[in-house]
Amino acid sequence: MPTISKLLSGMKKSIKERTDPKFETQSFDSVQDDMPHNDRPSDDCLSERCRRAQLATYEAVVIGVSAGGLEALHFLLPRFVKDFALAVMIVQHLHPHSDKFWIGNLDSKCQVTIKQADEKETIKPGVVYIAPANYHLLVEDDKTLSLSVSGRVNYARPSVDVLFRTVADVYGPHVIGIILTGANNDGSRGLKKIKDQGGMAIVQTPATAVVDSMPRAAIEATTVDYVLSLEEIGALLNTISSEKNTALASTSRYRSS
Amino acid sequence: MSDTENENIEIQLLLEAMYQKYGYDFRNYSRASVKRRIRHRLELSEFENISEIQHKLLYEREFFEILLLDLSINVSEMFRDPLFYLALRQEVIPILKTYPFIKIWHAGCSMGEEVYSMAILLQEEGLYKRTQLYATDFNDVVLQKAKAGIYPIDTIKDYTLNYQRAGGKDSFVKYYTAKHGSIIMDRDLKKNVVFANHNLVSDGVFGEMNLILCRNVLIYFNKDLQNRVLKLFYESLCHYGILCLGSKESLQFSDYADYFEALVRHEKIYKRKN
Image: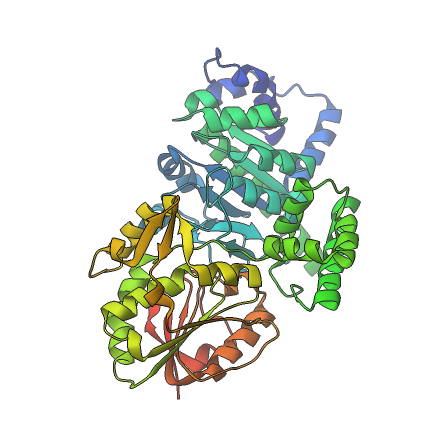
């Protein structure tokens, strides 16, 4: 197993290369091979501990996805581990009359629960909430979900920007915003808001997206922390989740002793 | 994070000012949505912050009207959620047919799209003549629009499609005239409709109804306010009266869950228990 710092610094190093369209996407393995083995100085251990502690503070993940999205979600969500420690909220652009059967289908393929978001529902870790077709999804200060049929934003309802902006308000630095494949620029402004409030921004490597305009617009709009393939996004989120679970377990051990 | 903190305080104060000065109470509305609408106004305006909006609100009535429109969401369609109207036709109309006289209340009717949809449905089912419809909203500007029954012509394709999917028995074109880039709804459709100002947050019961429709209004309220309004609906309905909510609204988690039973569960059509 690669250490978390190796994993993250490896990814970070390749960001610039990855945003460059000329660059072929590196595989996960090749990123790890770039890293020096067992020869890290000790102050790195300290910063590694810091990084791990910081990773454990994330509470929620928000994902914005449009054209090519069903495929992307079918690839990404089944990768989430059973005890996934963060709440996930997703805006997938859909036709206004779409039904929710695809959500049930996706749920049957995943270890985490995938459901359509209900209004006033309390957000729980380990659950993936999907915005209903024709409704904006918002998050309230008490971490419950709310819905709205107010006008379209970026021609879309649900709109990624609407969700991202409210999670930036509520979760501040404890949220991870992710933009995946899509044919417009919805989500760029919201992702910038998340960054402004201290959260993390991840964008799918444009070259690996079915339609790359949404990822490209997001990269242009703000300083993105990671540009990754779907596979790497899954791995990173699982790593963050396990850091969170480890931190939670040690807190509860401390409390009970 | 002090900006966020200030903003939250400013929004609370703005809503307080609106209530104390004009009597419109948004304090128990879902805050995320209200915040979005106020920010939108701030972005459109030249104001530096929400406190400046509050000042203008207190001193200029015209500005209050603008803000009131900002805070009310007036997005709807004719036969919105066609399958709901199909269920209404198949499951609710047969019940209404058993009454000699029918009273229907559209609470939060906005610009009236769903009121005209209901009127068309009642005409086609031969019930319109013995029905009284009450269409209420808290906003006089949108009520005027509802009363006028004039809509942009580019909506017609969607409305016609909705009408057909909702089990429409005739041709939708029969119910409107197209003129100057608009469609004007047939006058006969509003013959038995009373358009009136009523605020669900502060006003009470005004009649005994056989059917209440309040779709996509409760989603903007917090739990307390939802319960208040559901109590109002319960008290306004006759025995076995019918309540229709929006497709993502539910009685399930409210204090009034036991006062109603589902008639068509997936379309959020409920029947008052005795």
